[in-house]
Length: 132
Image (spheres, rainbow, N blue to C red):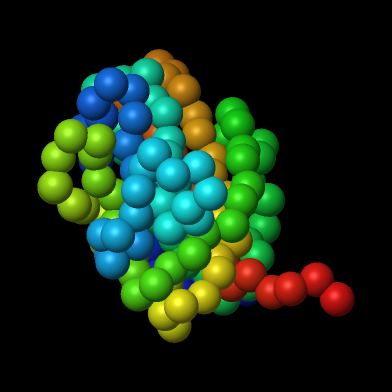
C-alpha cells in the first residue's frame, strides 16, 4: 500500500469550517448528497492539513490521532484542493489519480497539544471498490 502523493499546507478557517473539494469547482456545500466536497470543522483560525493519496487502504493511525471519520468522495477531475467558505483561495492541491471515480476518504484530527499548539488534520484517500 504505497503512498502515491502528499500535500501539506496551512488552512485559514472562517466560521469554523473549511472544505476539501474536487478541482471541478462545481461542488455545492449546501447540497447534503453531493459527494464532491468534504466539509471539515475546526476550532482554530489556522490549521495544519496533510492530504494523502494511497493506492490501497492505508494502515490505521488512530493511536496517533484523536478522532477518525470515514466516507466516500467523488472526484470528477482526479485532483482535490482545500478552500474556505467565503473565499476562492485554493491550496493543498493533491493529485488522486484517474478522474470520474469514487474514493474512500478517512479524516483524522488532533486537537492542540503543548508540543504543537495548532489543530491538525490528516486526510487520506484511496480507491473505492464495490463490495462483492
